[in-house]
Amino acid sequence: MNIEILNSIHGGVVLTDPISEGARKIKENIKKYARENQDKPIQIYHAAIAGTSQTINSHVSKKAARQILKRQRRNEDVYLEPQTADMIDLPLYLCKTLSGNAFLEPNKNKPRTYRFNGKTNGNRKQDLLFGTWNVRTMFQPGTAISVVKEIEKYKVKIVALQEIRWNDEGTIDINYTTILYGKCNERRQFGVGFAVHKSLVHTIKEFKVINYRIAILIVKAKFFDIVFLNVHAPTEEKSLEEKEEFYAELEDILSRINNSKIRIILGDMNAKIGKEQFLKPTIGKYSLHETTNDNGMKLVDLATGKGFRIMSTMFPHKDIHKGTWRSPDGQHVNQIDHILVNERFTNAVNDVRVYRGADCNSDHYLVVGKLNIKLKVRQQSDNSNCVKYEITKLNNEEICKAFQTEASEEIIWKQGKTKRKPWFNTVCEEAIIRRKEARLKWLTDTTNQLNGTRYMTRRKEAHNICRGEKRKYINKVIEMAESDHRAHRSRQLYQKVNGMKKGYKGHEKFIRNKDGELITAKIEIAEIWAEYFEQLLNGEYPEEIFDCIREPPNNCEYETPTI
Image 1 (cartoon, rainbow, N blue to C red):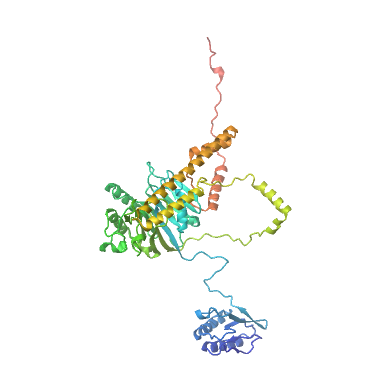
Image 2 (image 1 turned 180 degrees about the horizontal axis):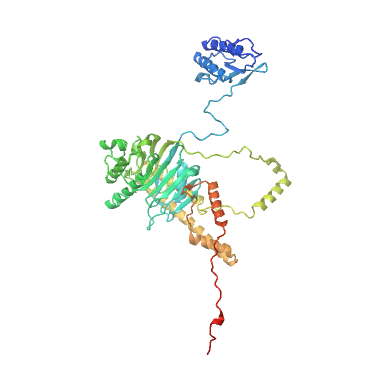
């Protein structure tokens, strides 16, 4: 590259390209600036490429010239960056003068929208994976852990669960997932809830269980709140009155939700959607079925009346990625689980499909959708003042023993967190893996009776193994309770007896503030409890004193008893 060394101005040297038209303008501007500002040193004027045979494009130089003129008026330094892709790998330097000495330094300027503080700001749009799954039951031993592991495997952040069949309402943490669930009916049927990844727990704004068929989850996003409506509709064989009652209640709930929010209805609809021409604006053209059944028409009427679109039939996929339910014999597949989004935000949904590999011993498949949205970001604490320990000093035996002694005295009275299901061991995991492998082979060829028989055998084997391991654990606890009784350890004895008698009790992980808003952050929950007890225990002394003590009766007023 032909580099011309301009005249020294205040001891500084400026490199530029004399070939381009923009460079001549820059040269004139530099001279003009030097004449008008003779008492000010020149700091940065132009970017030059050193040590290469490349030339700067003329339009880049023109832009640089305009930038210099603009910044000259504000008396600012001029920063330039490569504007074309072929200049990215070139060594770009700035010629800078300081105190009469010229030197080169790399360009450290960043775009105006770029803020780098050592970690990403988390405000970029991302695909939020959400879905629905009828797990058929989570009351059987080992099912809850299997469901959570499959959800985490496919990296789905929010999943609407149907047929949980737990007889209580609350929250539970399993691995990296929090399950918010409602109670089932008297016959231990139905029950709906949500599985939320722990990275999104702080975004939960509201969770409400309407009944054993409907639950609502509201998540805070960057600009709009997302309302997930988890529903489990009646089957086709149910009475017309029960269906109408369900859809009337669903319409009433939707009418009370603000239209400005992203509203997503998802769950087991028990509805077949066809390919009728007059329904295409609402259902699309990629359904698995040809005709719409009665439940399907009710769902379409709901979507049309409330301004929704059925997104599960909007995207082209293979038929195996459309069917959501398979019959026990494996010969019939239906698409009855659906996802609906209000029309205003249909463009935010990128895809909806089925993942057959997720296995929790259910006849339904996991349905997953992609939502392009900005979520509310939790403010991360600044760890710049973290103390860095000199671990190498532990190689000294005296220091190591002193550390162990002090640490043991510190934690001797602290009780560690117990495992919620200690009976679920590697034996159960291996049995579930064998069941899953047999299921995948059966799905590849459902007409093969040998694969079907092997899968049914593995299902029974996994179920029996999980129940057997749980029974062994219960017998072990009973033996330990008897040992505590013989050793007169009454405290440990009653703890084991109460734990086995009461079973698992659902607890509320979140609380509500005075305004009725759901609080999920631990620090805010602690502050609310502190404020509550402060008002409770530090109440004002009552001004009025109640006369509760009466004078004892005078015995002289009564006659002396006689025989």
